[in-house]
Image (tube, rainbow, N blue to C red):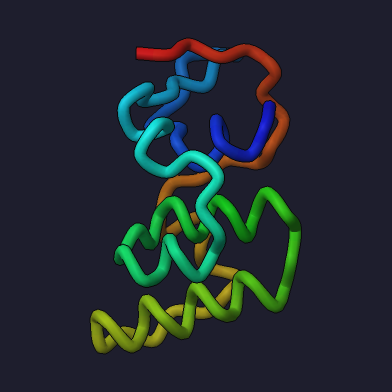
Length: 94
């Protein structure tokens, strides 16, 4: 699965990742900073998880905490946003 599909995944149906086609077009090829500036926190978290970057995960957590007056850690992003690991190879685009 490529990064654009991963950050646009809205759920899972068995082995399929359900991808929002219009969201994918909106977010296509955006940088982490662009996603954060647009307040697309779930997509930004997925971006950082896809890259498996501790630094990017922390940046997302910091930006989200600042915007929402929360205290989430970088390790809690998957649970917070309902993001699974990058292991789905089948895409269902809606």
